[in-house]
Each structure stands twice: as C-alpha cells, then as structure tokens.
Image (cartoon, rainbow, N blue to C red):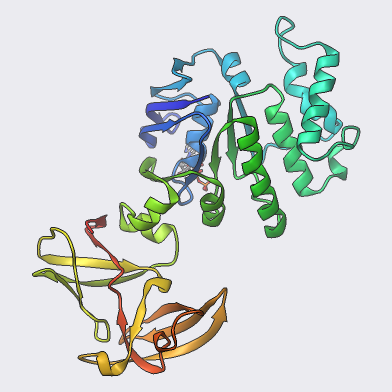
Length: 355
Ligand SMILES: Nc1ncnc2c1ncn2[C@@H]1O[C@H](COP(=O)(O)OP(=O)(O)OP(=O)(O)O)[C@@H](O)[C@H]1O
C-alpha cells in the first residue's frame, strides 16, 4: 500500500508554533523508509499525523492514491508500534494480539475461530508459537516488542508505522530483531515507516532515509546518496562523525585555513570565496612529510578498532581523528609527522553542499 503525504502543516495546539512545516513525502508500496533527525525535529509528530492520532492544519494523506478521511478505515489499513505503547498487562499474549480484531464492529469482525487462527499465524510469524497463553510480564523485552508488532499486524494493515520500537532493547537483541523485522517487511509486502535515533539501524534496514530538521524534511534519499551527496552540512554531520575544515576556493583549488592540511583541486563549477570542506575520519589520508610543502603536524597512534588504525592529528588549535583501514599499504600509515590530505571532502557554502 503506497503512502503519499501532501503539504502537511501542523501547529502546536493553541499556538502558531509550526511542528510540521509543509511536509510532503512519497512512500511507494513495499518500501521501507527510516525517519531520522535530532530530538524535536518532528518525527513522532509526522508519524502520529499519518496514523491519524493528531489532526493537521492542512495537507492530505493518500493511501493507495485514495484520500483517507474515515478513522476506522485508517485504523484498519495502518498498524503502529510506539515505544511507549505498552501491552495490556492483564490480558494474555493471544488476547493482546487479537485486541484490534475483537473490537472491530460486528459487520466486519472475523468469527471467533478465524480470529484464533489469525493469532496462531501471527505467533508463528513472530517466532513465539507457544506464548499465546502467557502474560506480558513473563516475556523478555524483545518478545514483548514482537507481540506489539503482532498486535499491530492483526488487522492485516498494508502500512506499518514504528516509532523507536526497539529503543528499550539491549544492542544485541536490537540487532537481531531489526534484521528479522526487515525480512518480515519483505515477506508480508508491507510499506514501513520507522522512526529511529540509531543511524546504523536506519542504514541497515531502510531503502530510503528521510532526514528531518525543525519540522521539515531536509533530505530524502537512499543511504548511498545521503552518504555521497549530503544536501547540507547538517545532514553530513548528523549521519556520522565528520571533521570540518574552513578555507577558501580560488581558481579551482580549495585552500584550508589551517597549517598541516593540503590544498586540493576542486572539480565542477564553483565560484571563488569562503567554503567549508567536510570529511569523515576514514576518508582522510596522511601524506608523508617529504611530500608536504609547508608545515607538518604531529600524528599519534590510538590503536586499532573495527578494522581501522586510529590516529589523532594535532593541528594548531584542535585535534582531528584519522582512521586508516588496517589493510592499507604500509606507506598509508603515518609515522609521527605528516600532513592531512582531505581531497575526498564535500564542499559546503552557508551550510549547503555545492560539490
Ligand atoms: N502537543 C504538543 N504541544 C506543543 N508542542 C509539541 C506537542 N507535541 C510535540 N511538540 C513539540 O514538537 C516538536 C517535535 O516533537 P516530536 O516529538 O515530533 O519530535 P521528534 O523528532 O520525534 O523528537 P524525539 O526524537 O525526541 O522523539 C518538539 O519541539 C515538541 O516539544
């Protein structure tokens, strides 16, 4: 089921403060989108608006190209799991799962037998086949989240909305459950929108990442494009560790302000003037002192982690992290002194990327 959001505007109740600022988003059937952004960016607000839990000043939601007005319709087509959306403690797992079906109007409610069969099917899908009679208190955190997912899927929705569903789980369980979620999404042909604080989680499960900031979408792209071509300096910084070098573009060259960093040739049409080069620690190379013109800087080893040798380069007023892959050729590893080669940087002017 496709989801199209058109120009959603929501103000904080009773005020003119914009929580959603003309947000439009197109999520084709079968895609898995991760919504990321700093705290307060409006991710939960957007998800709640899609679920119909809050009203909006203006804008529209289309499911499979049809405008949705009727709440009951929407509830059937959209399943959601919110982090704080707890299970009912006094109901068995099976009752928790069937709840959405049990409360349907009689005209559309399946028979008791059909509901029981559906619950069994969902329990098997969630890999909890024998848990139907248990009460939530007996379950682990990961099992509870799977029951919450089963409950969200009971009515057979085409769209699944997830707001930090794994936030409370420990990292190992979290990693296991997210790859399982991705395969569940594929198997059921769902359209999923996931809010997460965890960049790694977003990159691993989603086909597309939507970055929000101050009630607006700042970029909507595949993980590869976001990494290669972040639209703004904010996006680049938000999606991973990045160093920023201030400098000047002139006659096709970027010259950093700081000593110990090599100028580099810039490709593309760029007007002269101040600019910022941004680069990730593993994209920085170190040139040996004899190749350097100008001042060399001290570079100290910090050990090996996750297949990278970590170094700290000491510029005049700050240090810069440099990560060189452990499999690199011997001459790529700095020995005491060197100069930084930041030619793999993206360039930004006034926060917007232009190379
Ligand atoms: N009912 C409300 N009344 C007033 N302000 C609200 C209301 N709901 C949300 N906000 C504000 O809207 C902004 C966006 O909140 P929202 O929960 O959507 O952010 P978020 O991106 O999901 O953040 P987090 O990652 O911390 O969950 C915040 O500044 C929040 O304080």
